[in-house]
Image (cartoon, rainbow over all chains, first blue to last red; front, top):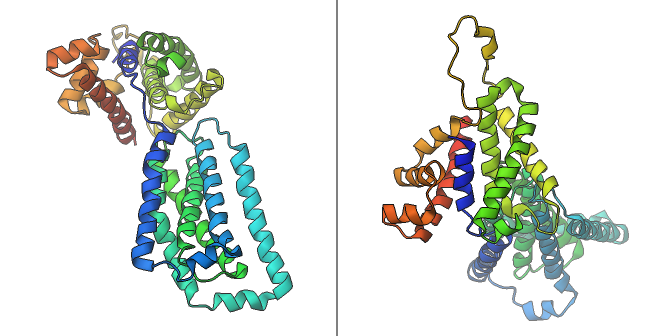
Length: 210
Length: 170
């Protein structure tokens, strides 16, 4: 086939394509809503939800939500041949460092014993299993949208997508989670969000190649 | 490109026509060992990618760096995929072989082979519009499809071309 013939075929196909953003808007809200519905039906909301949402424990929902939105911005920024993701990268970094600082401060004031005490709680297992399950649909929606992109590094872009999905899963799980201690939820949520980040990177390296 | 993203076919054809020599230059500079035809295969692959990923160019950014980034990515990819293939330069056999017909340097084989693997109707549409030079409306009238349906089918066909190509080369 001659190159001119190919150009003629390509030039005829100028219908506007659904970009990454359009697909994200179409796929992600239903995915998060389905995860929330699953939480409602299978996990059930925590009994004192209303009281918790008007207490400092609200951070447990807001922080993952903020991290999730920043990571979505990062994933979009990294989905181009010439990545530009300065602001969302800074936000993600700032949120991560704040979480780390909060844990270190908690250990410094309460001692390591406080951390291991939380690690022995049976709810930890529920948390570890639940967050990946609740993140699965958002991750699928995010990667589906990101396939419209052309990331310079599919691995890095996939990791950002996984970070966003894990954070959104943690946000949904926070409506069930009865543990409000900083030394419980930051290490537990943080670890599972990192697991989802790694999964996103692995899947991204395969699915986001172009 | 801006006009193309608004649906202006002529502007888009002009743009692709202007881009092609630049891409060809980059590919030939990197891939002398592939021969003219092999290089043209890569050029066509790059053009197809530019087409399918044109939404990742931000309209407020200059086009050229984006174009180079896409081209570099695809060229690296294409040469990695072809890395194992042995290519013997024809010049070594000039004495042995009868001189071949002067080949058209802008003709390439891979794309035609991939088009053969499309569904018959999709292949027909790509050939009619590309090689036959028909418009979407003419092809639609001949195949009994609406112009819109031809455009949708063409778009799907181009996307599957890219996927099939990837699979065939690996």
